[in-house]
Amino acid sequence: MSELKKIGFVGTGIMGSAMVGHLLDAGYEVSVFNRTKSKAQPLIERGARWCETAGDCAKGQDVVITIVGYPKDVEQVYLAAGGIVDSAKTGAYLVDMTTSSPIVAEKIYAAAKAKNLHAVDAPVTGGDTGAKNATLTIFVGGDEADFNALKPVFDVLGKNIVHEGGAGAGQKTKISNQIALAGALAGVCEAFAYAKSAGLDLEKVFAAISKGSASSAQMSDIVSRGLLDGNFNPGFMLKHLGKDLAIGNETATAYGQALPILAVVLHELRQMENSGHGSEGTQALLKYYGVKD
Ligand code: NAP
Image 1 (cartoon, rainbow, N blue to C red):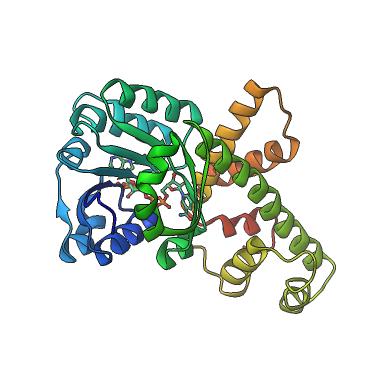
Image 2: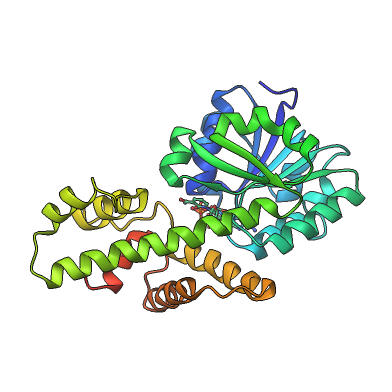
């Protein structure tokens, strides 16, 4: 275990709950806060201490970890009066693992530095399964010394942990990941829409093409959950992928980079959100393509 023993954790949703579980199992003293308290209850029963606000959850901790929903949630928990930056003790490490904007990450880094706090952005990939199995990939932006100090904590949560560069570099890498994922996801949906319209047996198509050069983690996950099991519960919510691609779209414009595939998938996701599918898993994109009802 790390020298850093006391952890405040904000955001005990799909990802955060599993991550707190691993930190408790590893012997860390964990305090938790979540907007909806009931989602933290199983962790409280396992020994986590409940706090009434994000700021309270930061007080006296060696490390504060957040994995909330959107950039606006990140700004609120860190930068609002009485929030994490206001409340953390001098020298504490602040780790945002939400997929959020690199601009917000840079803002938090600067606000933290001004108060002698160490902030890193450390978004993850690997999905709900990666969180449950502690096999997440973690992309870290911030100072290298802070990355090194936090590495034992990251090792409890993930397997492939990379320092990508300065503040915001973790988020920029995560958005690159999401751009690749979006193309793979839509490609899988389109392939199965084609196979369905061609009158093929979709299980047999999956059995064949999931073993060839078109195989991908997206294909295995989307098809087995959505197509074979008819399960649209979220591992990764469709509206969160929409949020990630919107960040990609905005920042790419600032970088002068055109991303035509991202634009198409973002449009599809927005249509799905507008028709009430935003809180389903990303496998629900199969419905957009008419592969499932
Ligand atoms: P989630 O289940 O919605 O969890 C987020 C949790 O944060 C929710 O429980 C939410 O509270 C809480 N929260 C939001 N704003 C808050 C605030 N201001 N104060 C306190 N708590 C707040 O979502 P998730 O799937 O765990 O994803 C979390 C983040 O990780 C997202 O940015 C997502 O894009 C990213 N991510 C997800 C996956 C995945 O596979 N699920 C993979 C990689 C990255 P409520 O309970 O009230 O909603």
